[in-house]
Length: 272
Length: 284
Image: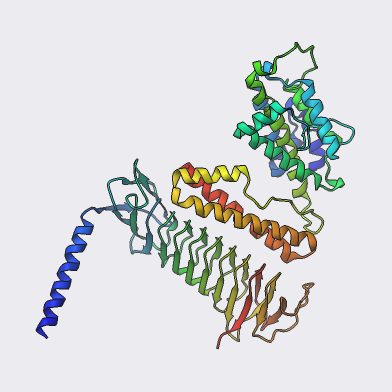
């Protein structure tokens, strides 16, 4: 069984695994990882309260956004873009809530990455269908029901809750994107990844965690993160200008390794 | 003459007295662990140096000097796995939380040392060595057969006489200096730090020295056997050798990139800098 064949039958896996599927899962870590992600999302979805189910407006908004980004055609869409219109209340909440702002930043990043995908890298409609079926089987998506008039400020938990399935969907898409890109290791044809040179909110939070534990190190972490992000930005530009230059890609890999090291060291330090 | 002797005696007295007074707050602890072959020893120190050197016999001896009572040393042994952790108590600072470790262990032991500020030193080992420092300097001497992994933010890294193992160094700001370092894989990844290599590049190894804005200076003897590629995107490259043209797709650019072989081209050498200078230097 090939990876492509396995992906086609992903939705049916919950009803029992054949020997062939099990054998493929044992031999293919990528498909096993994809299935594990899907199961994790399903497990998380089960814990959602019925009252936390997003309204059809949310799904419609997501689908519209993905269509606008050109990520999906002719099927369902799951990820919104940064250009989506948000209400003033939503924006105010995002400015005051760090976790939600972080999730929003992640989604924007995913959306930005998705734009760089080649058309051939776009997941097939079967993948979207598989995700939809899986989410429906788990009861996360149900038929729309008449929605009683709701006072927005009367349900503060909802503001956070609608982000949960959104984040789950984003995780699935990110998993598919990563899965696809890892299957095509040709550096020359891979589009360079866009990364901002300044430190992200997550990185600023990471520096704060380091400062809480070891104040004297926070300045070093902050300065080094900026230096590494600048390196990534320059290396990306070089790799983009010279897509077949092995050395340019080596610089990019080295820059990413440096950032990964800083993340790892900061995480280990804050967990002590 | 007699005056000099008196002054020397006085000075010695002052030094001993001052040392005693300073050492009054220090707390000495010693730990002994019996281990088998290929033991695993991990030391996690928030502030302060860690020094590791070999000792005969199947034992691990840890001498710890605590700079105050605001820090304790937790030890744990599971079979041949030994873990030592400096535990900071409330109110501890970089000074009061400091612990100095001097560790003796079997040369075949695997070692992991992690310290934020203190220098890390390892010598005479044959097992795998992992050194993680933030701003402290790292020095390694006489390591053979084991893998050596070093991660540091801004500390300097110095390797001397390291052979026959994988060497992987990732540093953001600190300089990396290597003398007589060879092995199947030698990889240095730096951002701002300079990289200096002085050795013969062994035989059959892969050497990859990459830096963003730092300079690279690689010094090799005339008899070195290498297949070398050097490129600086924005800086200059200088080559002291007469290289044979290499059969590769690499595009040479006068002053910023060169490639070629020397001798039988036993080892692959890549020297890459984004904006720094690269110099492949012939040892005189």
